[in-house]
Length: 265
Image 1 (cartoon, helix red, strand yellow):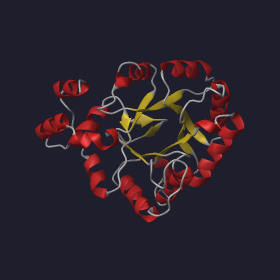
Image 2 (tube, helix red, strand yellow; image 1 turned 180 degrees about the horizontal axis):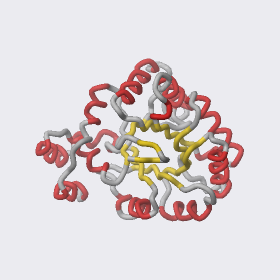
Image 3 (cartoon, rainbow, N blue to C red; image 1 turned 90 degrees about the vertical axis):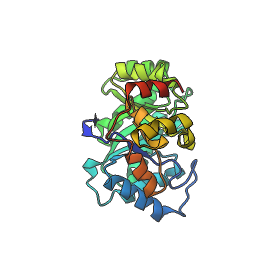
């Protein structure tokens, strides 16, 4: 799969609550999470999703440490600017600070994390395009944008296309299949699925378990395989065993019949 002119893995890795929560850093498990991130990359997952808000930037710092000994050009880093930093100068500053914490040459994909109606979208997108011009960012995108906002965004951008829309998408929340995902597909906008395991609920879904037995797969692997048809899911894991389980979602396909059955859950 190609994204921003780079080969990317079908599944990415999310880092929410790695290095802390909502703006609050947590340093207590740094060595563990650096090891986890290294393991993820060594297993062929090269899409790493983070944000300035995660642990107040500490998640980005951990990603930066984890990728030190890998070929940067073979890793795809997504990070996001929070909704209180969408004014022009604030957004530029946020991106530069993220780049510094990541200790990287560039950010592959930079997203507006959440829309903010108090800042003109035109101002934010002008800053996003300036970041591409400066070589700080390769591609730009959005997160949590509905069709109306996506249409507005596409009408404003002058130089660069909106590459991706990161949204909540899982077997318990498939509302985006009705409108946002078809819109993105028509307009060549990649869908990135956060909370792809429904905050752990997919693990205990009886229908997924039943379908999984046909393929000798777990409910987690079935849930992710379902999402692969129309998105790049970005699950998070805290153990190597869970990462191995996630990787088991790849290399096979649900039958159309089973896919339809899950779509009706």
